[in-house]
Length: 142
Image 1: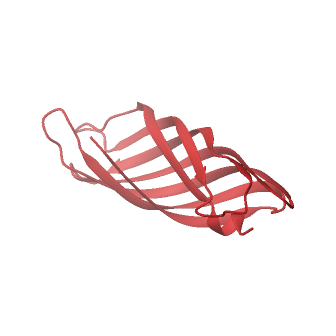
Image 2: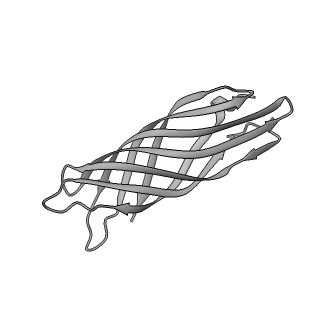
């Protein structure tokens, strides 16, 4: 029943609104909306897990040059619950993240990778009350 240690929070976010950097503006911002997925990472004692939830976020970034930028943001990861023989764990999860974005402009495309970290917190109730952890984040896009 080590749900607090074995929860994996991952989100596939689709930037739905972003301001692009131009030669005159180094700052950019955006909002995110997507699907969140919680995984128990082999916590086999869970009888049922509600995995998929809508998630949303907002971020701000700064371009250091055409290839490197830094982003800071907030993401609401949604509600997750797991049922065990001893009871239920239910909670809302959110995180703050800081990422380095490395990209290479190619014609009208900007493929990039992001690597960073997140501090997440869960307002949970039931068998576990409150959860906080740090996680490594990475992503790639074209």
